[in-house]
Image (cartoon, rainbow, N blue to C red; front, side, top):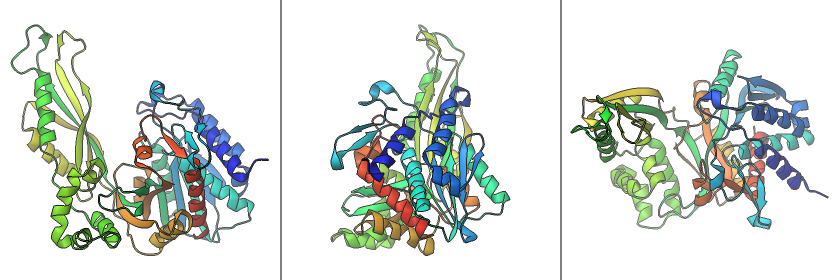
Length: 446
């Protein structure tokens, strides 16, 4: 006889096996898996669909409303059903088989989307299904917002926000994917932390383009377009954005300071004095801590000649820039122009969004999250604010709510975090099951 946890795991595996892969070029998307996913959710969670109102928005995004005793200040729980593409040959287990490997506490589900972000989506549905079965009725309205293209355009979430705004809905608390429960993410601090994003960095793409006449590769000019482009990329790399300690970063270290030993406790407790030194040290401590204290820029896509023996008439590079709270698109463009310092390299903004507003890390909404963390994930876990390093669909909700947070209630190792958007994405079964309890507690407290 199967247990409720076994049944929940079976539903997770079934939904992970549906390859809802999104692409920036939507003409490349196979929409049948998305239709299959929506149908499977409706079949697997019958009580959710009896108790909640369901709408399909923008083709494949899902919006649910669970009517509460009060329509004011509703709770919005977010996730997304699309996943990034895979290179199947790189995986130890087939990326859409959702194989369970190991036993007991070591049992792990291997699949694209296990963490990003079907794990959260299914955990939310499991929490709601169980509460409905128990006869629970929320004090406030509860919305479930599941976007279908978070990994690309985010159009589904934007359409949901527009719909809610049109209806006059102003959420009291929005929770999307983001930080996790982690160990040792900050050097010198060993306490387990629940990293709750109170803001997220802006994101923009800049295109660097160098041009030349072209011709045969056997007679290259003194400064080929590819060399000019390479020099521009190198200059930008050697002139990074300035280091700065933002208010959320200061709050992070102030929260963690009491859990450290001297002299680090004094250093983190006196950031008004030590802030610049700490910020510089964080740039050397790793990629994650570096991204906490500066706007980052990195060349991603490169293009040049169409053949190996042909001079490129144009050579170009896409620069992905993540804007730290307090920085701006205009300021970042000015920095890129100063760093490249070459009028022969064209610099164009492809697209961009400014950093999100900062949500408060005090007050009722914050306490609801922190209490659910302590009660379901461990009283030893310290809930702390931080700046979300990646972009999420939650950024669209900041126009209708002042309390938008980013937290995924899973205790993840560094290796598990590194597998996001890479091969061998996976989540431990017991970690995922505890996440269901978090969402259940948060809904019950709402």
